[in-house]
Length: 385
RNA sequence: CGUGGUCCACUCUUUC
Image (cartoon, rainbow, N blue to C red):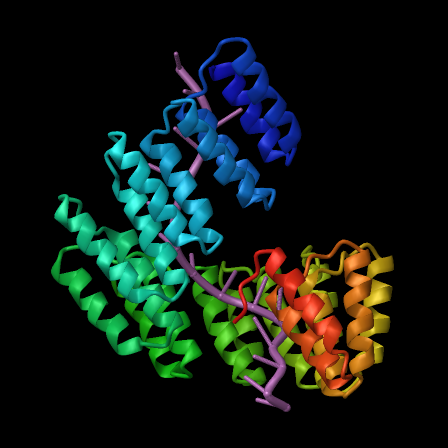
């Protein structure tokens, strides 16, 4: 079993999910019983392959055959379901396993708490914390970080601060992540002074600011279009041993491009290349967004073609950005065309894609097609918002 | 004796 597990782990890591599945079948044929390790590897591999349905099916198969899912595999399963937004399915799974004698762990509860936070269900998250306490598990640093992050993302900073206090009272030490979460939260609420305050505060706890601390700050400055401050911060990072990464550059490139300064955006792309960092599809999408925001969707589309020839793969965000660019220029006909194009290229639509496309079709009066699209969206298990 | 699990920063969002 160990041999199979190791092989399967390697295959999944390589994205070779089909071969992994074949090995799984082979091990059963050879009379071997897959264990928790086997399932954890497959749950994670299938999920990374974007196939959450396969994960659910595998779990059901495990239940039918009385294969054991241990706490470790359960936590992996809960994580992949939660990351897909299917927290209630995750709860169902835990309930089933508990009935079979599984003792839930901190990791399982933390994963659920984070799952609730990510779907903005803070009440669900707190209820889960109560449940874990009731069976004698104490909220740890990760539990608190998830909750604080959930509150910060909803811009409920006062409640987040209260939790930080409570964390302190309960003797749970903050981590660098805790401060990074707060810096990000204050950045999103435009409280730059609080960002810098927390940057200092983390040093008092003997924690060094990380690339994420600076990244959160950079993001705040860029979103507020405080571009000269952002440039200064970039220089400061270069002067410290916190080297900017591609993501850091992407924030600056996005800000410059969206505010119409394509030149500076391109200069920054050259800078990042000189530093050995590669532009990604995110970088490209920022440039495309900038052109769209400045009323130049056809230039943006041209750029997309050029980038595609250079080997970048346009994704759902590229297309949504372009379509929304055309939509704001009232070129609704192009929206439907691009939706066709992305389908033909195998780029999977998301809820935003359908919303934009349906809006465009409605303006064009193509109501039957709207209906068809709506049904198709439901068939793809997308939930209308 | 085995490579498996939970928390932090970047791009898209109809209604305008």
